[in-house]
Length: 463
Ligand SMILES: *[C@@H]1O[C@H](CO)[C@@H](O)[C@H](O)[C@H]1NC(C)=O
Ligand SMILES: *[C@@H]1O[C@H](CO)[C@@H](O)[C@H](O)[C@H]1NC(C)=O
Ligand SMILES: *[C@@H]1O[C@H](CO)[C@@H](O)[C@H](O)[C@H]1NC(C)=O
Ligand SMILES: *[C@@H]1O[C@H](CO)[C@@H](O)[C@H](O)[C@H]1NC(C)=O
Ligand SMILES: *[C@@H]1O[C@H](CO)[C@@H](O)[C@H](O)[C@H]1NC(C)=O
Ligand SMILES: *[C@@H]1O[C@H](CO)[C@@H](O)[C@H](O)[C@H]1NC(C)=O
Ligand SMILES: *[C@@H]1O[C@H](CO)[C@@H](O)[C@H](O)[C@H]1NC(C)=O
Ligand SMILES: *[C@@H]1O[C@H](CO)[C@@H](O)[C@H](O)[C@H]1NC(C)=O
Image (tube, rainbow, N blue to C red; front, top):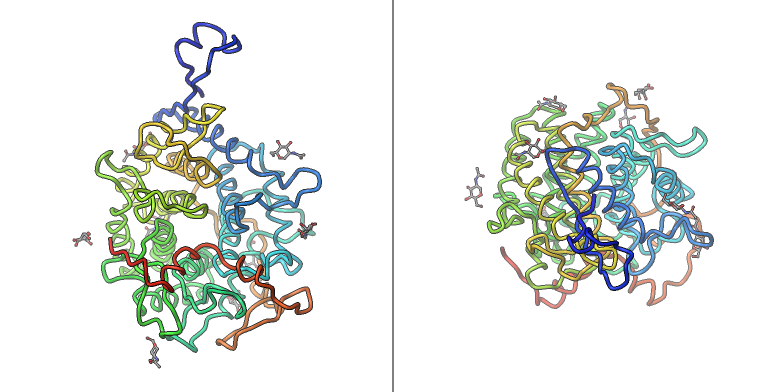
């Protein structure tokens, strides 16, 4: 699992003055090597998670990590179990996933709702959806179930669909008092699209695929999706979405890629096959030619401006590219060429930190770049474990052995947000309190950096 420097291998690593230089070895022709590499990186990621320590809150990551990224982290760990079969973290992961479900079982826990965006809720729902598809162990019968949790979020977000501006779409923020309520962003709509497509595939219920199609059509109509399948960050409803912020992030391409692949698999309508091909072709902007096929975050890595959130984005493009090969099998060669090269490059630079196996941000560099954190670990974990997709089981559905219990009307119990653009200030589970500046500053995360760009007109990037 670890390569020791020759000097230390010859002597004892415990000898004074002998610095152990580790790295993660990864042999893609050997599943055991891949699983060992994933285990090392997963351990490095879960070291950040303190939510199961006495006095800490299950499911939260410590600062500076926002709540949504915890949902993404547990999604990565649900995939980790699916790919490797390693159950070491399952108890902690299940506890976190259930604790943060909140009193209404819809991923709107009281401690988070006040600043919660649709994308934040979406990342937790997608983790629950993966648990259902992966046949990750079902919670005890008296606890909320994975499928019902995903359906609850879908139902609430469908009810927040807002045609009062821009002809539809989801807003970034759920509540009108939060900054970003006027921003209709791609990741919020993309998570909803992705979730809807997968619910259709899992349950066979066409209502979900109708919503997925509607969500795609709207995103395209306001040009969050370009005619050559590039995905831009978001758009401002105070100008009726007449201009978009053109920053391109890996995770936006990824979230629509998998949703389109699932729609292809569910409908077998050629239009979705064309979209899958178009999106894949356009993801080339996220891959280097030298070193060949290595993923990078084009909008911030070269400039050294990636924030805490953005450091994790490559995890999601990796995750959703790999999952796409299951739903749209003809994409396998194209995708695995890129996943394999990226995994190899990611592992090679996980040679930093005091443990010698800390992963950095830039896979395009041959050695650790000195950066570290949950996002860096998660990205390396997802791309490395994704190389196991070939032998991983096809996602289960209700018709093919999926056991997760659903509830088609989950979540409609009055939680959160308004329908049809009336705005909302009602929070579930607590009486309305005055909103402080701190609440507003804390509001919304994923696109905060970009929002400043929209307001300031300073960031206008066309790749
Ligand atoms: C990627 O690596 C896997 C595991 O070694 C291998 O089975 C597959 O053929 C490779 N795919 C490509 C396109 O290189
Ligand atoms: C927290 O979870 C990790 C990983 O599952 C486990 O190793 C550790 O023992 C747990 N700690 C506590 C205090 O439960
Ligand atoms: C909400 O946050 C408080 C303060 O951190 C914590 O004590 C409590 O356990 C949290 N509640 C839930 C349900 O997580
Ligand atoms: C706002 O945009 C939508 C969708 O593009 C369009 O149907 C509507 O007419 C526009 N409204 C105004 C007032 O321009
Ligand atoms: C692939 O992308 C390139 C560059 O954006 C474009 O010129 C080309 O037409 C695209 N090909 C397909 C098949 O979409
Ligand atoms: C849908 O996915 C299944 C499972 O991976 C696969 O066997 C099948 O070929 C896919 N269907 C189409 C039309 O691509
Ligand atoms: C599949 O869905 C149907 C209809 O919702 C339900 O009656 C059945 O129990 C589900 N099967 C499983 C295994 O959950
Ligand atoms: C399909 O899903 C919709 C939306 O949640 C729900 O209203 C409807 O009852 C579902 N139909 C079936 C047959 O489960």
